Length: 245
Image (cartoon, rainbow, N blue to C red; front, side, top):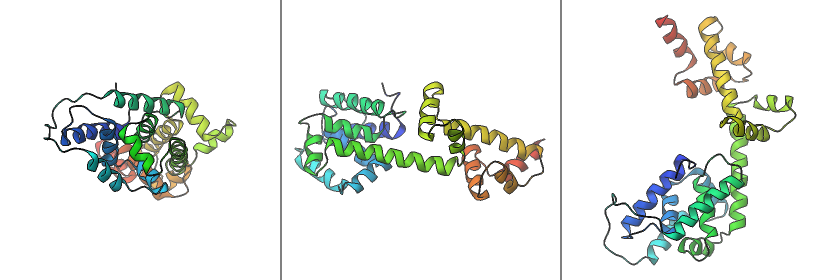
């Protein structure tokens, strides 16, 4: 059921169950999903609240203040989703698909909450000035900004491939993902890492020279990308593989 959900969204739903049990509910309601999203604190959602001038802690206090205290249920208990919560998840999935995003995130679940008319989470969010269309626009804007930043920081020459093909980097990513299930930046990054490993093993070029040859303007940036992709810095990789040869 949750194969299309990213790690942050899955954590938010896990926390939703915890919030429901803490408040003594026998089912996971929309407000518990909202509390789960707030507890998880995904970066896009945090940024969205900041832009719309909404304080998460105020939302939490308001929801908890409206709940009648009952005995807490064990956090290990299996709690089903309410019908409203099922609609939230369905709407969240629809939003991610409509935006052509590769997975369902906490931000899509937040939009899903706003699409279920009359639920407590929707009423709470609207009372604080959030509406479906403004939140949807902010989610799209934040996703676009993060994608541009990721392309610039992690793969500085992806734009060159897109330019050679006369398409935008965003369009290239979308097409490649439809065909391979992976982003264009991921595939280019893997190709770059293979070439970097080859050069470290079979040439005497320094890490800085390899960085420049691969199109990086900053050797330190290359070192960070290589370390993230292989688990060790270029020099350590060369030494470890050289010692084992």
